[in-house]
Image (cartoon, rainbow, N blue to C red; front, side, top):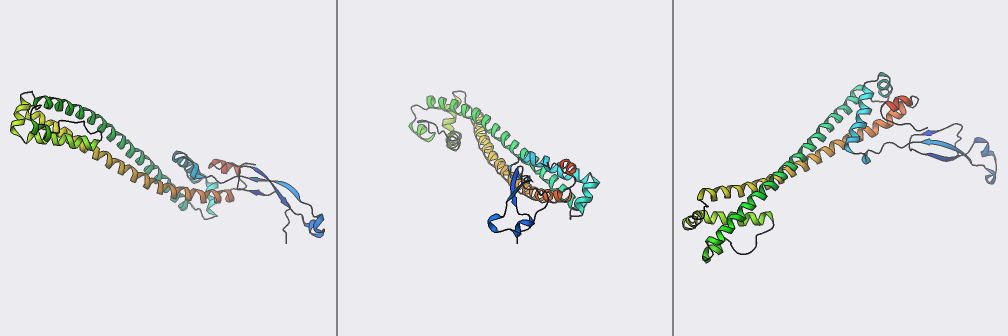
Length: 265
């Protein structure tokens, strides 16, 4: 049996005005070929698609929904009758607070990544420059020493990767420091054991800075995952609440506007 529709129908599903056919009761008595189709307007508006919002926009919308609901007795009473008591609204408030905290923490973690990367970039440039200077001196000092040339890797190009030149630099300084004769030769060019030792420590410092970048990156990725899971909980709560609020406040569009739900007539 085809149902009769006798008044204006508002469906909270879209942001656009659509045509919708319906059959009045009298049409049921007519032959099939003479049944008219009457068109009328139906008002639609889609529920907010939170997956398309930025994290900042989600926090803003959540604040409107939750804080303004908690702060208005009329809204609280209306939604309480549909299961969204003050206690349940406060559950949403806790999700909002947790999401905001995790959002800020994720930003901090990526700030730490940027700081670690900047430190690595700066120290790598300085230490690599010092290494090339020391290498140039060693090539002059040991240009006739085949063993030194081979052991210290004095010939050939330098590795372009971080791990590659760290390996070359560590081998260079460690080999020099382990050979008293070579240390004496380098000292004759003003490169004392103390300078060699300090240079090696600087190289190790670059390696530690590189490891710290990886650590901070891992922390930031973990913070992002935790943040996103909490935001998923929040947006699920908001999606459910939007539908409840639209039903509970269907006759109070100004209150829907107050909590951020725009009514399109």
